[in-house]
Length: 347
Image 1 (cartoon, one colour):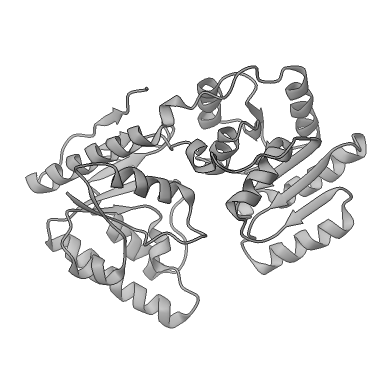
Image 2 (cartoon, rainbow, N blue to C red):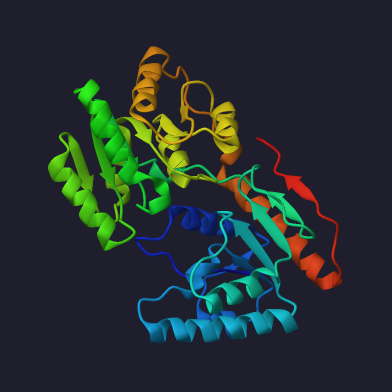
């Protein structure tokens, strides 16, 4: 079966999740994987369209680029409506799309064509009338396997990833400043591409103002990512809302403990990977929670490597192939099936 993902050929800035998924699908004998382009999406023959972040299809710096993509997406929705192409959508987050009303309407029309949902977390709610499969986010061990690790710097806290408002990075700076007044041995490294120029300016100003705070405010190479994560005693992800986190899995894949919000997702992750790896804070991150997590880590460090066996990419690829077949069968029958959840067996 020919499957088109909603992303093109990988670049240096492409999310590793997408690259690893592409490679896992390339290894599947029943899947012929096609990279996305608007020309291919509108003219080539394929049986499944797999959507990841639908708003990314409309991203553009200039009004004329966005206008062209809106027209192309409208044509794609029409092709899906009148054709026999099945649609699979991975639910990476559960917040509704933002942006202009026209963009939201186009994304909504695209999502209405969904035949099967892929949930990468058991905490992801199901959608009425649409079958879903649970396929856990794969680990990053293979991705980082050949990259050198750094020695742990005692007391170093680390944040890595895109810096968006909901991720609470500026809150982390304030919490760290308060905590470091109590424990002057701790330090903080923040690295990632800021969401906008205002955030970048505020973080640069904080770097000048807050002792022992270091920032790298740009896209990181994989080698830089590994160096910052592995040199940190604790990776802190102070998100105000966390539905899933590739950064948490990346840190755990590099055998570094994480501090994350206390919710259903992260309690399940803690149970999965084993004791000592996932530390949690309740409500908004505070200086006390930061210092408590560090003390807890030092008092009871992990004794074994994090258990990530259920997140192997061979299993992920095979599970996606089954989801595509389910979507094709559902579209061909031209009738709605009762909601069904399918969990991928653990290895």
